[in-house]
Amino acid sequence: MKFTPLKSEHEAAHAKMVEFAGWFMPVEYFGIRAEHMHVREKVGLFDVSHMGEIRVRGEHALETLQWLTTNDVLKLTNGAAQYSLLPNERGGVVDDIIVYCIEANRDYLVCVNAANAAKDWAWFQANNRGAELKNESAEWGQIAVQGPRAVELVNRLFQGAAKVQPFHFTPVHFDGALCFAARTGYTGEDGFEIFVPTRQAVGLWRKLLNVGSDLEARPIGLGARDTLRTEMKYSLYGQEIDDSTNPYAAGLGWVVKPDAKDFVGKTTMLEARAKGLSEKLVGFKMIDKGIPRHDYRVLAVDSSPIGRVTSGTVSPSLNENIGIAYVQAEYAKAGSEFMIDIRGRGAKAKVVETPFVTTALTKKRDVK
Amino acid sequence: MANYTIPEENYYTKDHEWASVDENMCTVGVTEYAQDSLGEVVYVELPETGQKVTQGEPFGVVESVKAVSDLVSPVSGTVVEVNEGVMEDPGVINDDAMNEGWLVRIEMDSEKELANLMRAPDYRKLIGGK
Image (cartoon, rainbow over all chains, first blue to last red):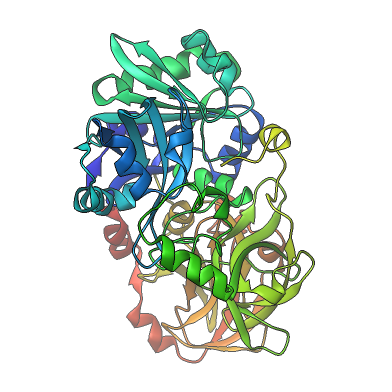
């Protein structure tokens, strides 16, 4: 099992620790629902040091990333970030990622999922188009500061951070080390994800809690991170998307730019789309009792299977049971009703508009 | 490790249910260790009265925000009473797993089955290493 630099901080705070993707991570600090609401209403700190980082540099950096990702990397100016996908040859998804442009054409940092970090690194090496690749996963800690008070908190520590636009980042210095403060996140709230060298991670974590004490900054576990992202219908790799997912079916067509460039598996991906995708990813709410869970079947009223649940939970913000599912396209419209097979019982559910919850950030714009 | 209440007079399963026996009546709940591991319980599914249950077989589920766990019956018999209170407010299981958070009362088929269950010292040992 792998440990983040903040392990001792979590243990000292009596977080409930679990194994996640091979990492020893805090799942809960003071109750998932309370932590969730704390992030929606105040500000929370997440240890996301388990995320992987791959550095792509050199004169073939852009060319390599254009080939390996679906979004148009050419659009990225220095200090800009982009949600994107690593496609495979079958038109599926190796991983969903964020590409950070440190220096256009020459230097990028790619943030990848912990569960896929080894697979992605091998994939980069196997499909490299001449870039200088470096797996920097062990060098970086990562702290996400999320919530309505997050920007104020980060700005206290790193003056000027508040001016960083969504999906942009800025280099900052902490304890003599170069860090990157990125206006990105996975909660639907405004805030930052701060890349910090492993050695400075504990110091930054403590400093953020200290500087943010009057803002009620508190550490938050991965359990709430999952319910927060589910309320926004953000995809989680391994649930909504995997090696066989067509990005268009997952509602991720907006990060696929086939007209701008060529990329791995482009033809296959577009052919599948042209043939007509049988399934679409939808958000739904339970009408009947019961919590939908990953892999539960979705049934039509006549009990014929029409899809599968990818994620589900009780929504702490709404106090309703919500879920995300792939369903046959004719059932994908808001208002459509179907049944969720909850341990053999057909429980009624209906498709709703997403995100499930409106936040200050989603009011401004639609971002991941 | 947290300090869990594990009454001596109860029986325990390896799946972390407790069973309190009064003649042929068996009251069943989940242990404090179980509720602590689960986290906040947000949903409980229990059998109806009159339903038969079998020792070692699931008779219902408890769900936390993150996960679904089977409830495993400590004894075989017939459900004679169900705690409606926990179905309305599953948080009671977190607040008071050993008393108010009881789940079902079962009329036992055979007291002999109790020999298959753990007593407090063994249960304490079971969770002690965790």
